[in-house]
Amino acid sequence: MSGSCVPFSAGQLLDRATELFGLDPGTGLQFWEGAALLAAARPPGLPASSSTVRPWIETQGGGSYTPPLLPFPLNPTAPVIIWGDRLNSIAPEALHALLSTRYPAEAMVALAILDQTGGLVARSGCRLADLPTSDLSTPDYWLLALGPLPISSELRSAESLRWIMARLLGPDGCPWDVRQTHHSLRGALLEETYELFEAIAETDSMGMSEELGDLLISIFAHSEMARQRGAFAIEDVFAQAGAKLIRRHPHVFANLHVDGEGTVLRNWEQIKAAELAAKGRTRASLLDGVPVALPALAAAQALGKKAARAGFNWTELDQVWAKLHEELDELAAAVAAGDTTHSAEELGDLLFVATRLADWLQIDAELALHDANTKFRRRFRVVEAAAAAQERTLASMDLTELITLWEAAKASSSR
Image (tube, rainbow, N blue to C red; front, side):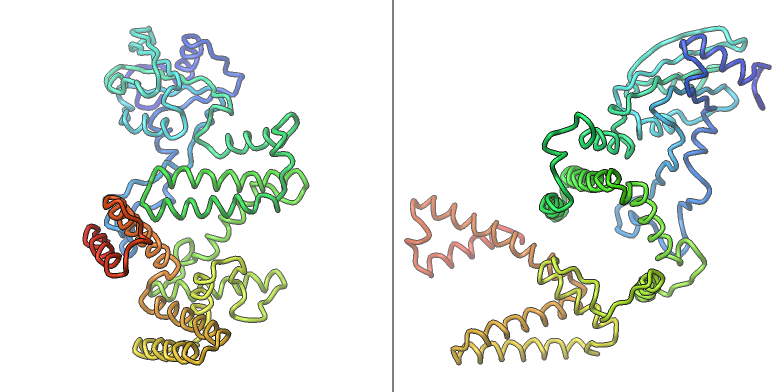
């Protein structure tokens, strides 16, 4: 053992650990020196900073960046022994943080403190959450052991979720789940997406975590169904997603230089076109690729953006405003003429141009309307409550009274 305070080898430590903890080296036992384990979770290929592009948290003004522990070097479903000594010291808090990313807080940990000859000084057991990290800082040798977790309890990993889904859709699984199809689960996928949308809008971090988990359930369910019918498996989903992100970000994963976000977006579209060509597919129109099921307002903005990238766009914001007023005048004329069909057409044109204005203002039209709906609901409930406090209904009030309540509701809210 290089740098050890006495000639007590790693092999001898392994023998001592298996004796103390009653572990069998032939059962996939993992044996790690603490510093090497921490180093394995921070590969040199993952830079912590850049001279030109700051991490997301810093770009958003949210604080300092902490790199993820990747790749996770342990298999929690197999036993593990971690060791250290006085000279090969580690930051105990860092080891605790690494273990806590995959092991549950209630996972049992056995700790042994040894002297220079390998003699047992102290031995204890506790939950991972209660691990006395200070005990890893001073002894000549320390040994830490974690037993294997059942895959059904190793809940902080994709493997566990895959096992659960395979169990639900496998022999003696759930009678309801095994009757579902890709088609029947479409509604659930859409519903979970909108629930995530709502959690994001409300800045509900815990809700976001839960709804992202629900989306993962859908992804793993569809993938397991596809695996069973021989179409693809979750590994293919991971591989395609990872390869696509690397391929479409050559300015990050290769040596391509970009001059800003505009160049990134243009490269993205060019790479997508090359990907389609490689598959023997082409798009008949530059507007292809906008999902039919997308909400109409979001689809309108997406179509407008695609056209703009092809050069079909105004050159000045004033031109957008002029077009908006033109469409508003045309709608007013159609309404005045009593032409319902033409009025609907002109209203659609007005809404479409409104999404182009949103694009020029760098606003997501769908999100803006969603926020407006939320604001309207909130203020309208205040109006209802105010009317109820007067023991009246909204229907019994005239417009002047309703406007008064509405203005009071606006004043009581900052938005």
